[in-house]
Length: 321
Image (cartoon, rainbow, N blue to C red):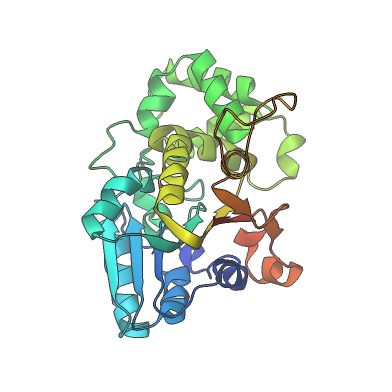
């Protein structure tokens, strides 16, 4: 049986917690939805903000995360009502309908890989642990595994995934190495994939920039779980569910996610798009959001030193008009 013990990397604090709380500006009695519940690090503090008259909704794909978060909320925020829902925030409409809430005053999306299941070696997310290639966040709903991606995608498709989702400079070389090695035997473990990645990256380039497999593992994980599609769907739904004056806060960790969030906020904050020569508006487009953060918030140097996961975090905030 795969090891179900959390690695030490999971022992971390929530990223940009004070910035999140300040940005959401929750009040007693508010309804707030944590779309990436994980270990409930953000949720415990948000629960304290909304208080006994408020409601915390937490969403996660993993039963272990939901159970751990429930225990923590019962222990640290025992008087605050909460509803914990199993699912992917890409299905936010369905999940919030099941929660029977009329609207939401605050949404948090923390897109970092911080849920407990990601730190269990046997799930195949970590390049530090040798385990079967899986990477499914919710095995019940996803059939595609990392092993299938690595062993069945063409060299061109592997190159595309690594270059687009991982922004990997040596994508074509890594893809070529994967194809070469799998011709001899299927690539079955994370350790074998790490070796492929290392072989595809020049030795000089491996000496800096962190672990050489970080970008490749990110890319495969995004492909397996359709993460960017889910983000777009989740943002659209969250904006619909926001009450007037409610805010949405998104923490992203790489440029692909940040561009999606920035574009969504820009599009929803734009008013009339008619040509200036028209005397009256015929498009009928009105802004739905007000962007609060023209430039994304970033973690302080002190937080980065204390919590390395915050290094690449960018936080964007918008308010429903």
